[in-house]
Image (tube, rainbow, N blue to C red; front, side):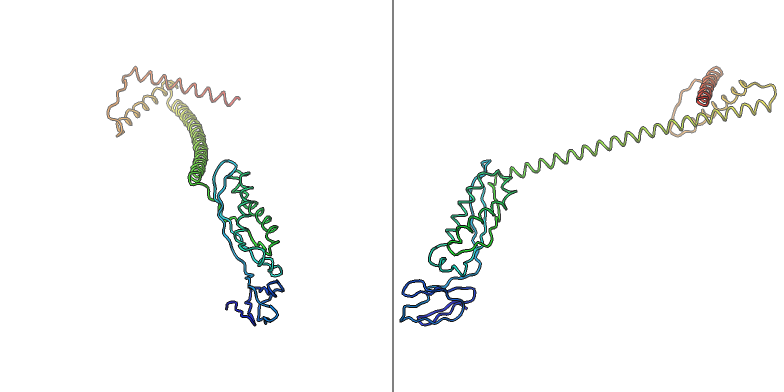
Amino acid sequence: MGNAYCLLCGCVDQASIGVVERWGRFERLAEPGLHLFNPFAGQCLAGILSTRIKSLDVRIETKTKDNVFVQLVCSIQYRIVKENADDAFYELANPQEQIQAYVFDVVRALVPRMALDELFEQKGEVARSVLEELEKVMSAYGYNIEHMLMVDIIPDPSVRKAMNEINAAQRLQLASVYKGEAEKILMVKKAEAEAEAKYLGGVGVAKQRQAITDGLRENILNFSHKVTGTSAKEVMDLIMVTQYFDTIKDLGNSSKNTTVFIPHGPGHVRDIGDQIRNGMMEAAAGAQGNDSD
């Protein structure tokens, strides 16, 4: 239902306030409801103002401290104060233009002192400064500023593209650092694993050779005790010859070998036996030295 009035009576709608004049001069404010007027006494309803909250969007173009042109979109919610509705009715013909002018003035005084990044970080401070200035000015005209919102900050398209590229480059750089650290850790762990494997392999080979040495020693002692008239050297030569022929047999049976050239003859067998015997003696001497330590 809209506001309606005539010469004798007038109806002021809810969330509205009426202005009553007598002979062209302000007399009083009319609350929502039906009001009677005396036209013979010069009384009339001069106008009706809405007390609902109104919204005004303002788009401002300005320059930051680092010479970047930006557009700021502000949204101002304001309303008429019922008690001062006569000031709003008589003082301002176009309150939207007045509010917009003050927003332009405050924003263009603050933003040029800030860099672009600082503006994004402190847009709430800019909105608060504009709100304080508007409240101080517009309250004298019967208006109350409810909220002041900095809706958007829009840099020039070329600047936005450059900012996105900088952000992407920084993220790629950070990703490269993380990737390098991961590869470094992987290489270190791989090297540690190889070192541990070689160490364990060496320990295994040493134990294997020690076991072979112990086994040969026991075989030689048993054979010498059971067969009288044989020396340890003769038994060792017999064992070496037997192992030599076993090795040749294994090489021949292996499917991975096609042709193998090896020296063969009694003299070569003797040389191999001497080499193995010397190695066993050195291993036994080394084991005794470790036990004494």
